[in-house]
Length: 451
Image (cartoon, rainbow, N blue to C red; front, side, top):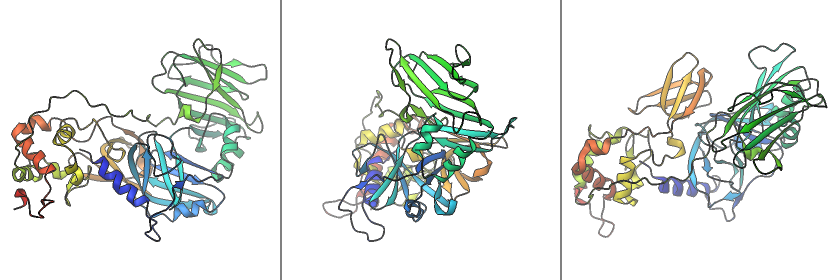
């Protein structure tokens, strides 16, 4: 069950107050214009690197302050964009003499527009667009990369210009003039329908494959001594995985890589930009939820006092995962504000819990390097660990360096089948409890289930 409206109101009130003075901001908070870069280095951390004081300002934000996620570009707060949820900051670490800040966070499950507050009046935004990079040093590289990083586009030259001021990028791009291999992985989101993806590199392409397989004509040599690969894309409805490995150290100072897409029936080729590239571990932003066809039973006449016993009892087990009016466990959303919803909406959230899931309550599958797997709601636990809580409210903590992969689930952690298991009479009682305030707003007297 969700309480999106209540969460949005609470977060907006929090963001409109200066932590230093508690006074409401009189102006909108604009996006910061600054050199450097901010990016998601993994599902569980973001990196903020530049050459001025903005990093210090972000570092002063206490752990636990939310990072908000919206369904489109944000230029200022407040915004009319749809709020998808929020992430908490579990811990932080400053490096590069204070120029680079790494924030350990809850999982980034979807490619929304994420908002980080630099100060009460300045924000920085990022999304999950871009390319995951890995560089293997030497003429005969080993299996493990020397470093892993991020670029906004497939082209190292353009990416270098776009990240000026970022200390990690300065080191990474310096290495690309040395002998080695650069692996670039992303998901391609063509701007239109079916067509052809063509990639030209000034450096030798050593390996390339996509969700469509290997390049149609293999790796072709260009007149300039570089390489060209191309793929026919039959279905652009979902992002297409792409892996490209190029030689470094011979195309100085940096290799240039151009990726262009030409739609069928249109000879014009468009250069792919960051908006057409999605990090390989990210999921596309979900479309607004569509309510499914559902037969709604008669929900009138429930007894809220009996409903309270059901909520806190062993049959429905609601309080094992949800807080209501200060009682219960915070695995899932706080349901206190659900009183503002209609009985039909509450029924739908019980009968179809996966119809709408806020970002922070998306269940995750966590695969560990030793083969163990955990499934549940993941929270950042300081800088070096995460906590996974399953559907039975059992929690276990894992060090971050033991995590091999983390992937979001498509369904809610809340079990399905609760509605038929309870039956219509108990459902009416439960919904009556959830939607009845404890005090009559006109008289101030206790309602019947609190007597």
